[in-house]
Length: 89
Image (cartoon, rainbow, N blue to C red; front, top):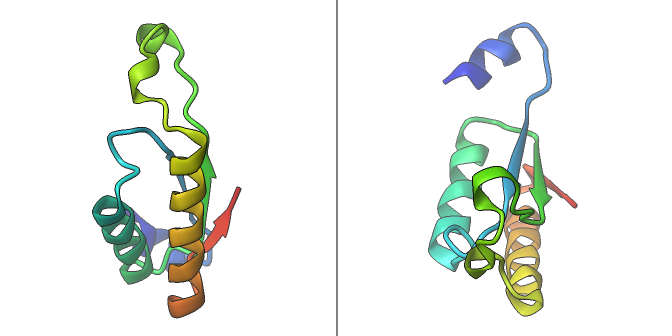
């Protein structure tokens, strides 16, 4: 993975993840977090989903407030357990 090349040159790598109905389920969040941990990605920036471009008008994939809260809570639990990546909002 490219992240290991950046590490070799002492460059920080941050992952950004817009949350949508398609990736906000527990299984996907855990897999994504563990993959980032395995590749030693230090930060995970969580983003609200903003439908722009072709996605304008597709509000069906925007998570509810409770889904966002669940995702953030789960990712914070994983951060406590593994230490990194640090969850940034």
